Length: 168
Image 1 (cartoon, rainbow, N blue to C red):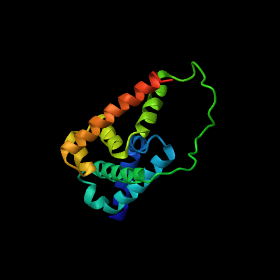
Image 2 (tube, helix red, strand yellow):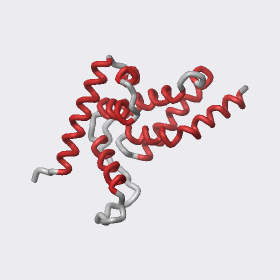
Image 3 (tube, rainbow, N blue to C red):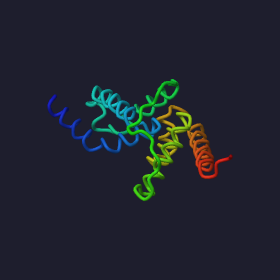
C-alpha cells in the first residue's frame, strides 16, 4: 500500500514538476531558488495528505498551498543581498530571442506587484483559472479576487509602459 502510494506520488511529481516550478517562479517574482523551495515545501505538505487528495485534485491542492505560502512570504521584506546566477554584463545583441527578453521583462514587472495581486494575475491569466477558483485559492470573495486581478493588470501595464517610455 505504502509503495503504491509513493509510486503514484512520484508519477505526479515527475509529470507536473516543470509546470509547477514555473508557476512557483511567477508567484515569487522570478527567483528560481525561492521557487524551487516553495514548490518543495508544498509537495511535502501534499505528501502527508496524498491518500485523501490523490483521487480528486492534487495539482489544485499544491497550487493552493503554493499561493498561500507565496503570499505569506511576500509580506516579509528582505533588505539584504539578492544573489544572481551571473554578474550583469553589457547586453549582447542578437544572442537572445525576443521571447526570452519579453518573458524576463514580464517576470520583473510581476515581481513588483504586491503578493495578492501577483497571485491573482498569475492564476487568472497565466493558469487561466476562473475567477471563482482564484477567489477560493486566495480565500476571499470573487469580487475581491477580481479586483486584485484588475489592479494587478493595471499596475503591470503601468510598469511595462514606464520601462518602454522612461521619464527622464
